[in-house]
Image (tube, rainbow, N blue to C red; front, side):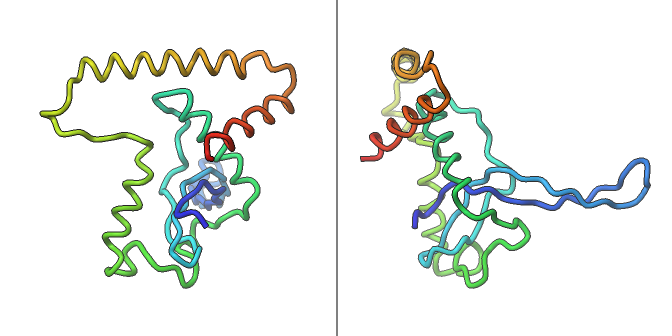
Length: 164
């Protein structure tokens, strides 16, 4: 199993109802990042659902397809994370370095450079050009697809091709 993926997570929220003036339970669902131990058990999920706000169209599209995969997996209960027997975050001090490495892996592709090696203006120009090209490619490949089925098919095909 992957060290992380997106999962649908159910949370129970208890609020005081303004008209009843008593606590009421409400169930909400969201897509969260889920992190696994070496045995494939969920050891942590993000506190809040993930945000669909990215700095480039390719990452947004890839993330969206990965999120869609969450609907093919069982719903996780937020109050039952970590899963029984899961090893990791805060429970296994010997794995602290692994936790940090794993969190680095899901840093949304951002690379950090030493300041001396970094030309900010050139970086921003390159980033803008890459974004412009990605948007053009996206427009050519996906925009105007006549049916939702064909669009999903194209999105999945692109996602799987990039994973090879």
